[in-house]
Image (tube, rainbow, N blue to C red; front, side):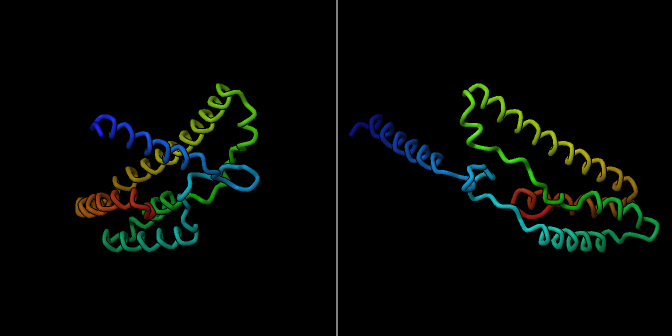
Amino acid sequence: MKPVFKTLLIASLLAGAGFSAMAQKHGTEDGKYEGRPGMHRMDPAKMTEMHAKRSAELKAKLKITAAQEANWTAFTNSMKPPAAKSKPAMDRAELAKLPTPERLDKMKALRTEHMAARNAEMEQREQAVKTFYATLTPEQKKVFDTESASMKGRQHGGSSRH
């Protein structure tokens, strides 16, 4: 077999497998899409427990003083994992009835709305970090910098955030 033909054959087989995997039904029995397959949310109780544990560890490492306690409390409250929200589900049956351009516009609007909400949450957290960081001593800032740099990798690995 010629190398070019063999490459094209393998590529088409992989593409076919990919399309068939995408064509499988994902969602609930009523046709509402609930997220990507294989993706799941951590139990909110476990998230809260993990957040409390990590916050306590960070507080001990930072050696928060009594004078800093109010700032610490405000910071940790702003960093708590968001409460489980009931995100409006896309009704697949309703979307299927729309012409393709309208369906794409509807999906884009939902995506834009979701991204705007996530960006607002991230901006609020960033501001809370900056406000709290300004109240730390130089020694505490070094500890915070080290700890927050080590947390960055955990965020993308599935663990809870600080």
